[in-house]
Length: 513
Image (cartoon, rainbow, N blue to C red; front, side, top):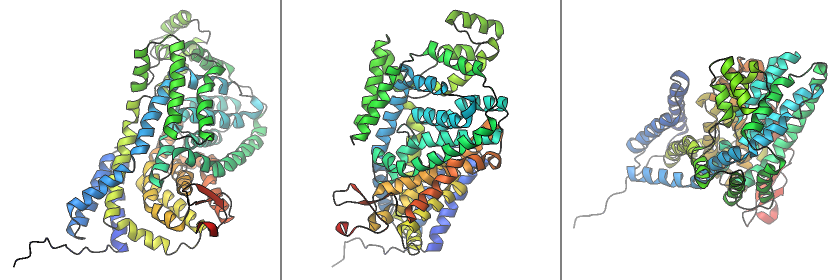
């Protein structure tokens, strides 16, 4: 009697050499697209997944159905992060249009003082980046303005840019509006606010150390005078284009309070959206305008007119029309700064990041299904004997990914996918992994010249990474402090029996075993 059952093909187990080779092929593909041709990484990730899948099917004997199912399951794990990212897009748009973000920037600029300029720069960039969720936007707008002021004071440009980058990335990694702050917990298996609370343990002390450094260094430049015309001009235009009031701070305060009360991320973020929408209604905008901002983000008005003015005569007419008192010579520059910072938000603005997450998980899931990640993990795990060693391994892995793959998102997504199982087996709460991914993956990206972050900032400030990198104190100190704290048994969280984090020492508490 013939046997009608389909014979299961015996699968091959990938060797470490083959696994590393597949990682190297992916790195080469991604580098070729990002560095040589200047393209986004999305398609190169898909090509990398195709290469992995081809080896998995043709050599390791996996079926296409198994590969596809594994990829779909991997993508499904990102859905909560995608929902949060889309919500964050809506939040940014409403917070800008309603005056929440402009209010933060307006009052942040007011704290400038000649004697503490570097410290004020750190604070301002941290506040703006925390409010907007973007280190690039902060550096490209407020950062440029602060650099101009520093040059007038005689403060070295590399030092100023390093402090700007430190503040911008500190706010970025701690902001619920940041895509990396949402990506890290998504790949680690924890939620957004658990992740932010965990980062306070490493980012908080590092920020305080950097603050002390900026205060000490700032004493050398306390004799200069600030360009109050530029600062006043920015504040003047902001006050004409937006509603500026301390009342606007109720929106971020509400989100912070809900976070402290451990409410779910999505309802907390939407509470911030609805408060900002209420401000818009009070300001006189109709329902259609609110919906448009939620969908497409904010479109600058007064600042855009200044930025697009043809000549000084047109600028003078616009200044008179809007009752602005800033000097004509800086009006266009101020307009450009505000346009670049405020042209943001909206649900549609998150499509690039969401598609990147999906592409990254297509590649990561293909690597996982075929066993390549497991082979690499087994090799790494066999050498890890402690929590400190595990954290150090993640930090190094993130740095290597930033170095070879050229993109901070991959510096988070790939190590996160690779180490998740090891953290689970060791009994550590996933917030430990997500925290470390940001401590290294997010922060070291700007220290690599050919990484998208390093290249952007080098071009923006017309300085090489080698020039400003040593002064980006927070970016290189945070990973070191994170590893040191773990080896000292500080800020270690184990996974409790109810899934909640339990603080403990370097070894797992017996009651959790």
